[in-house]
Length: 214
Ligand code: AMP
Image 1 (cartoon, rainbow, N blue to C red):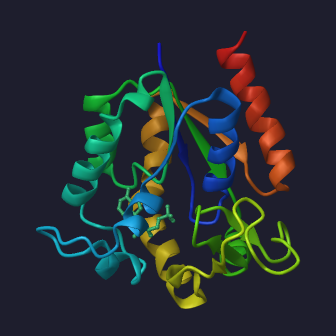
Image 2 (tube, protein in one colour):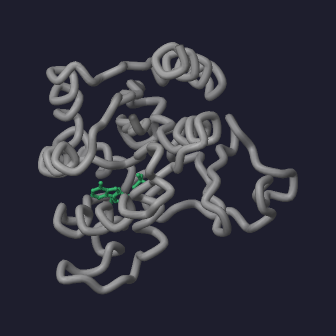
């Protein structure tokens, strides 16, 4: 049975950070739809470019997202499983997921809103490999470059406070209801995402080891 996992939670919950650790620990690919979209920000589609939505703190249309995801999941590296970060974000996307893959578990990172804003506005992202840092909680190298690949770090356009507030509103409206959706299906594992990166990881690691390596 492939280890198909989803990590769910508000922007700034630490989904990308924890998904990277899960991927490494279990040797499965980390699929971040945000990263895929950023790498193709100016791609022309029937619905316009991803940039038109992302920089406003809005979601790209479901049709655009579903097409991109379908292509990614057809890659052979997903045969033993994957950790999906940033998808599904709407009810339509969740229903589509139910049709195309068997999901084993949805990890819900629950984080207080005040922490989320602090985490996002202090975040810096590597222009080379996509690794993320936080100026206070997880600082980069002394010269401000990426400790993974040495490239320059930048603040994402959508990590500016005004856009962050809009992203949170979009999350509350469209994605938060998915917590209940998966809870009702008995697929949800809720994790307190407020503590430090290492503390949250220890909780997730124990949870997944118990469930998948017992
Ligand atoms: P993230 O890196 O996960 O914070 O995603 C950055 C941005 O990409 C989001 O604010 C959305 O504009 C867009 N995005 C990522 N995943 C999705 C998705 N599943 N559905 C719609 N838009 C998405």
